[in-house]
Length: 169
Image 1 (cartoon, rainbow, N blue to C red):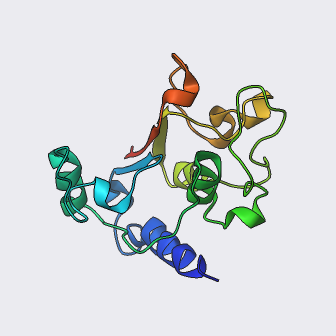
Image 2: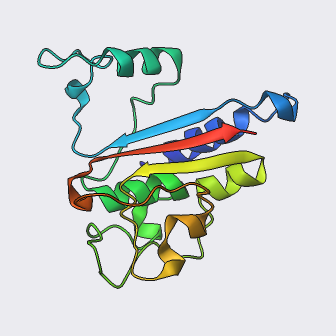
C-alpha cells in the first residue's frame, strides 16, 4: 500500500502536462536516477557539506521535487519501478540486480513510461546503466521505445547514474 501514493503522483505528473495544453507545448522531461544516493547527499534536501551540488539544486528548484517516495535499495528494482509505475513485487523484479549475461530481465509485456510518452510525440533517450536485462534482444532498451541508446562503454557495473530524456518533438 505504501506505493499507492507513488502511482497516483506518477500518473498525475505523466499526464498533467497533457491536459489543457496544445500538443506543441509539451515540456521536455529529464529523469535522473542515481544509485546509492542518500537523502542528505544532495544539497536541496538537507545540504551537503562535503560536495557542492549547485547544478542539481537548480534543476530541483526549477522542476519538481519528489521527496516523499520510497525506493528499493538496489538498482534493477528501482529502475523497474520507475519505468513501469508498479511496485517491484508486481513486476518480478524485487529480488536482486541483474548482472551482465544473466538470463532474465524485466518482463517484456509491461508498457513502460517511454512507450507511453512516445505515443504522445516524445523523443526518448537513455544514457547510463540500463540494468533491466540484456540477455536477449527483447530486453534491450530499444525494444522498450528508447529511440537513442548510446553503446555501453567501460564496466557497466561502475555506472551508478541513469539519465532518461523525453524531448517534445
